Length: 383
Ligand SMILES: [Fe+2]
Image 1 (cartoon, rainbow, N blue to C red):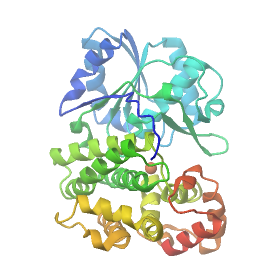
Image 2: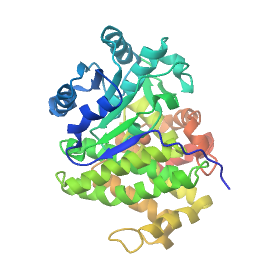
Image 3: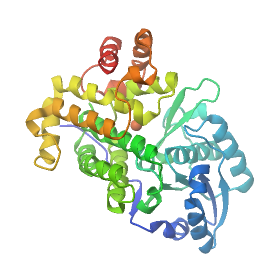
Image 4: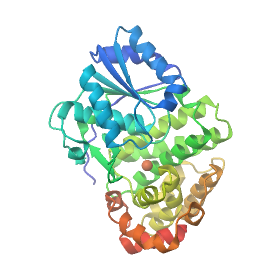
């Protein structure tokens, strides 16, 4: 029996056009002054303005912060915090992809608790109450909207820091699939693969439990099918909604369990070669599934039973190998290279990368033990 503590912290409001309710939801949380954290791409698409209009229609004063980049840095968080100190918000909205949501969390840490972002690395470092926050995701991927972690890169060392605290969880995740329709195809591909990896890694991780499994399983059902639909027809709102919910549930699965070796292998590829996170995870995941199959093949069989008979899914009997082939095929369908050698990675550096991957804490949750030797053979298999 696996002990767990499932505490729902995030209200999930889902549906087309729901962004119009942002003002009402912020008002319900008692806010009169709201800092909106959003990135320039999402602002240019006109989405952020719709949220701000809704806030202002509810009589709420707003301040926009747009000084953030993909994979937000400590400099971005510092700039947002300086703006927050002048404006004194009562609530923060993270409006955009994972970068906007993580930056909003980072600003909240520093605005309410002071110090530097580095002080919050790890878990449970916030000692003071934090401002309530609302997430409005415009991609279907990271699941940051239902997680208590902010990923912030150290501007000097470029190390990605995971800063987590239950107080940094969004109070509301406002999921409007209409906001995800305008994503560039490449963003759809990268974030979709990442979300699928979240569902599959949480499903077999060492700390999986009945609560996390419920979210992993539903996320898998929603993502695997709808991913193919959104690649074929980006305007398919039903499929976009499925992706958005799937990514959100996968985020809840992470929040209630952990990830595994594919994420451990992915991080050094991003740091050293700039391979986007979703792509890096997609390069590693099929090989990790095959490797894990030696130990937890039964679990993959169980997962495939949920989709048995559905169009295009591997049969349960094919187990880890069938699932790995299916995922590799999704990566190719998404238009992403499926070998490390095609992404500029040098064979001579695999050993160093494996040593780096071994230091990633997510690897410790992989169902089959992974040290530098196992991670090296996984890189070699993916080369
Ligand atoms: Fe991820």
